[in-house]
Image (cartoon, rainbow, N blue to C red; front, side, top):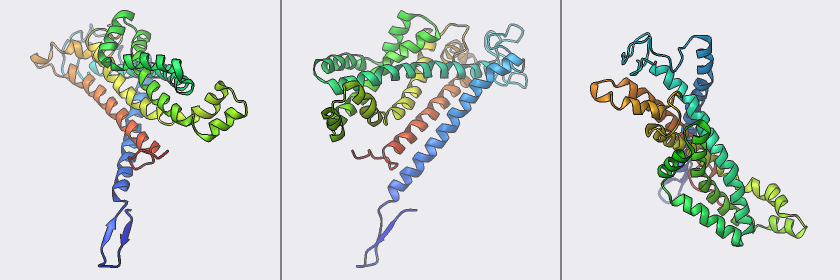
Length: 302
């Protein structure tokens, strides 16, 4: 409930906490919806291989016995594609592939970006200037363009796609962590630890890490949402994963030629799956950001 402050000279009241309260409520709702959406995708990603193994669902690449471009029906809920493959099964299987590649890519970016940012911000000097120059160079390149070049050089495959996406997001973690480390290292508790003889590794691990890691979960979810789109773009261009791996971007590429002929289902369901996952990750990231910053949508004071 918003707080009301009454003034005696006229009985007027002013709502001072109404906007922060609305922001907190909206952020919490976004976080809950994002958690539910992402949880549903994780559940689908875990259950789909099991259901295929048990024979409840057909194989994602099996479709020679099915009619091609068959519309949605009770037998094929989302229809079939140009090879007779079940669009629903491929869309469900694509969720597991997308989560696997995105989590691997963002996890690798986290592993490389956070330590480099902490080392650069704490040591300063020539090391800091060299790392900042390198990361700024990578950061200025368009995300999709850099991913396309790396994917072309590395080739197709889940590890290669994850590596291509990893290089894109390392500079973002580096910049955030480096700036926070440069601020925190001037605090009194860090100076006290240095005066007591603590080494750089001990200070980085014991004092700085816990203070600079708070904003990483926000960046993690937002990067994951962006990585889903970039992975879809790579698949659409034919540079993401092999053709035998069900992937939303690749399916959208195959569906492009069929859309003008009225075959809409081969593009609708993979596109909706990608859109809803990105929406859920974005909601989760916005909710975490509001929670980390103090719950009112404004940056927390240092």
